[in-house]
Amino acid sequence: MGVIKYDRTLFEPEHELFRESYRAFLHRHAEPYREEWEKAKIVDREVWREAGKQGFLGMAVPEEYGGGGNPDFRYNVIVSEETAAGRHSGLGFTLQNDVIAPYLLELTNEEQKRRWLPGFCSGELICAIAMTEPGTGSDLQGIKTRAVKDGDHYVLNGSKTFITNGIHADLVIVVACTDPDKGAQGFSLLVVERGMEGFERGRHLDKIGLDAQDTAELSFTDVRVPAENLLGVEGMGFIYLMQNLPQERISIAVMAAAAMEAVLESTLQYAKERKAFGKPIGSFQNSRFVLAELATEATAVRIMVDEFIRLHLDRKLTIDQAAMAKWYSTEVQVRLVDRCLQLHGGYGYMREYPIARAFLDSRIQTIYGGTTEIMKEIIGRGLGV
Image (cartoon, rainbow, N blue to C red; front, side):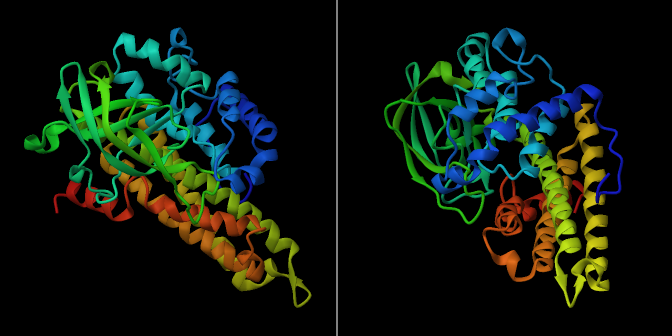
């Protein structure tokens, strides 16, 4: 069980075999390149193709389109957990599998499925979703990017920021306003493809954490997007976003729980080995109490997240519950990592130590996918206040 005092019953033997395979993939194809990718601020595209070849992309996509043919979300959970626990910040597989896949599976017609899903599963088509704009943040209804119908095309203009997979992306689901007079019913989802004239990548953003993660600004200047690249029905974009955000948020909670456990395990080992005043620092009462508190908090988050995963598997996870899981797990993660860094003393402030990098990587968790404040607003409204 390790430091987490909880026997997980969420997975079956076939899931654990999948976990072993994915761990082996990370050990061979990601671990040796971690430093290189973090310095470059981006991973090599080849790791995407290798992930596709080994079946770690599009597990839920039907086999006829090149996927695994198994919609069991627990396989997605394993990819997210192992990626987070191993601190492989540049591997945007969770975005591909958990966030993008539902749009391409549920909103596409047959022609679109055959055009996009095989590359999605093989790693040849890296995907992104472009919601956030420089002036909107969590205020999705304030989106200014505009798409005007012109014959059999939409003419797209606007800019997006903080886009994960933005530099590598071959397909970008763009949230755009197609009818400014209809409010929330005036947004649509358009798929912009690499090479479309007027689609440009701006700055490769310099973040304080997640160094290897590809995060960029995107701009669209009179991009002529074919009408056949519309996802679903025009004007339904905001509703589609609301339907899919709970899975994105439970995915973030999954990563939080896994990252917390990994950091706590390494900190416990450090506390047993590091000595001060001739004794292991973990033997001091304060250290024991801190570690006891953190183990309790991490266990509570794990139980909460696993229960919400079960609800999601049964399609019973509500928007409010996903918001609860997202804000609570990520806030506890940030606090836990901070206190683990404190136990490392001065060494915790050195980038060469994993705890320092975990500290930087964790900070975004309470922001992306909807800030903690937005999550509380959603929950509060659900309570009728």
